[in-house]
Length: 298
Ligand code: SF4
Image (tube, rainbow, N blue to C red; front, side):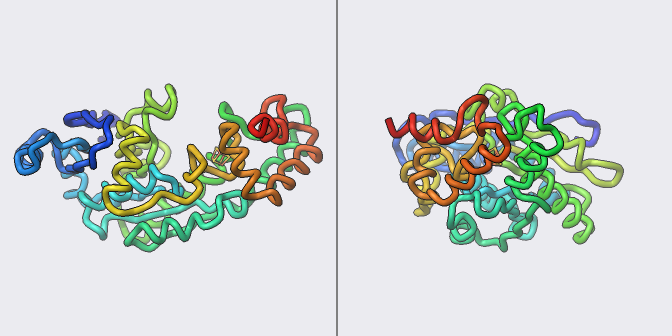
């Protein structure tokens, strides 16, 4: 809220780790709607993403929900669930385009799974520009971003999306918004500690109130795939072999995903390896992308 206090989101009836088709009740706050659905279906409602009272208050106050969509499964489900509770004219979908280092077909996939226009934003530099600049200005430290220093996320994704939100709110005359991301607790201990809804102190200022919101923070990967299946959609084709959809060669990618990336994009692999040679720094702390791919191939 404006004073910086936080909402606590509830996860109603968290009996989700099974293969039954999911029954998704976004309005469940433990009230009558959930009970009605449960009675009609003869089993418990599985997913309740929000505390109805609090989110309803934000919706009623005219909040704009900026859905940050990467093309990944979590973004896909976040959008699906939000569209069931938020009026269409209060949803705005935005994608930070990282150019050729993304999986091919990402924007096509997003467009095929949303009903809103897709706003595409770009940083004024590329991932490769960023690594080269660092090599030039700080030759004494690793040129590549890392999980501890995710300059790629802040400069290439968060920065352009924040800029978009500021400009779009101004254009609409909006005073209240939510910056929605598909972050889930299961992904890492660090993410598990995050508050699903809290004031964004960077975007908020006098006359502008913006919250960071993680609508599916409580869901497991299994839940997410179930929701996608339950509405007759498919995840991006890269999930055929990948565990995550990120940059093709993500600084936090597992061996399996890096190997799949190398199979699909040998041209791009070469560019990364050339950049390791050019900067004199390996992409992973002491390990080359080549080694990671070769380990996965062994
Ligand atoms: S997907 Fe990975 S490499 Fe790409 S911007 Fe995010 S953290 Fe960086």
